[in-house]
Image 1: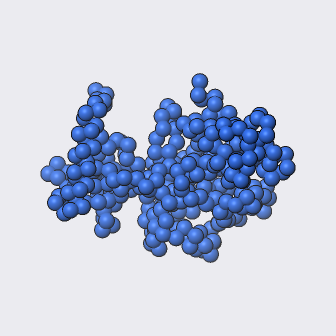
Image 2: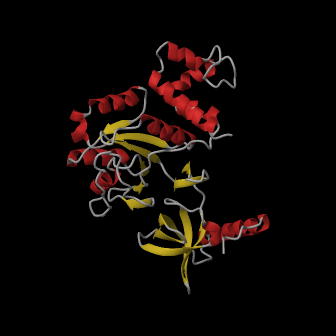
Length: 323
């Protein structure tokens, strides 16, 4: 039997009960405890309690949208442990799933760490899509070039990184040495960071270096095509010994933005922002209009051609999915 859809009245009743449970728990009138979703599976989730202990909990039917990083209330009952309600998210990273439905990837994120590497070859438009999504979610970003030991064979990769640094994005290079790992750890600080990027860029290997006591699955690059194999199948949260959390997300080769308004793409390009109020038309698409501030900046070389082309690629992709 398929999942039965809830009526509006049922949803309101569930939400009212969730609010009461949160209020009662805060006032000490219930056995509900706070925790964080460490990993989410079909009908269960691993919850990290505030004391650091891990608990496998069943999910109530109305909590099917929980993801790694969600803060929740949970309780031990006669039939097992249950997540009873979801606490409000302060941020979330979303993307469309294979069916085009918008889904959260991670919740309560402070930093999106966009990981690239010399192999597989970096895909600049994928980086730009993450940057746009992060801007819309008001989440800080860090572009990390991993596998620094391969840079000598791929100078174009270092140049790509410098392009992002020159326009104001926070960028760093890291690799397998202890000093590089420590520098990355210091930069992450106590924030909750989600690591994203193509398969095969070494996210799990890098997290292994940051979390020496954890054992993440590591996969070798696919021979020949160098596109990588998926080694992470569900987003997972790892606590760092020095403070903060890391969310390791499944590697992906595409990050769709077809769910957003095309007008919101341009502000996600950091170097476009000074020119957005110079357009003659308030609803300027920055594609063909006269007296467009962005097009004028492009002509004056204040905006790099490849970045503008990436912007056009994203906007046209959104438009192609709107029909």
